View 1 (cartoon, helix red, strand yellow):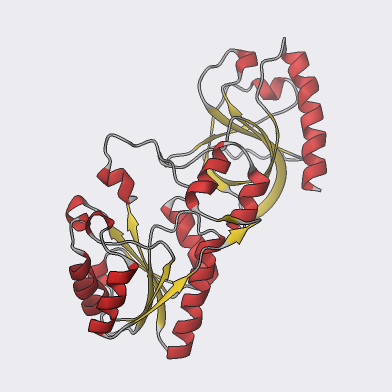
View 2 (view 1 turned 90 degrees about the vertical axis):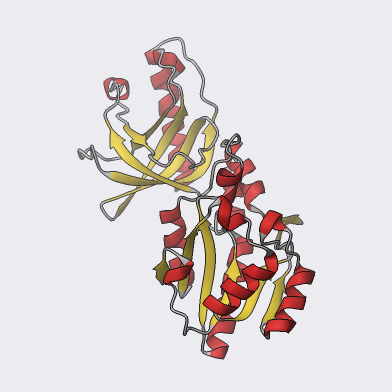
Length: 308
């Protein structure tokens, strides 16, 4: 997959099958659109192309509302899209000026003139252009004018519920990681650098790697203990992770700590990837470290059962 960091950098001679959107999560609904994109591109001997935006439009247009967190960082999204077999990813900087482009001008100047669209594949609720004024009806009219095709994809349902990035974010914030995987088609993940902690876990036989996530918009699951899979140095391990404020040791700062089973390497400073499998329990305060250790033994056995 080729990645272009601006619409202006995209080569104008390519015959493209395009879709547009933030594609946060690259979830099951997105995957249907992208797979269809690849099918059409192969049929017409063109190239499948996703036009996406960074930062997220909401973070640009609503400066007073920065609470929305995202399922994927841009780097994570690039990896997921590459696995699907997309030919081209165009990551265009989203600005207030860009947001003011009128729908008709967006189609003419960007989709037609610059990206050479042959077919546009869109979701059922697609809107575009200034204030999201552009509708599917207007797109249909413009497609006839500029001689390109449109294919609309119906919403994808799981257990009669339409899959969406918003619903998945809500599930993540509730810690519903099994349902999250069903909607995404893969386990929710986060990556971070291993940093020094207070080493309390080590004193009770449960050493942890403290994780620092640099991306400020990355969403976290609800506080609690999770069965997880860990990937570092190209190898996979099993473990359990605590997200919360460690009330038993009187530390009120938010932390992400993972106990990797059967692991003793020094990985300070390394980037590791955590994949969430299932939430085990809420975080809670224990009377003392001995009580905490007893619970951690139970948690570890439960995590091993879950992970197999």
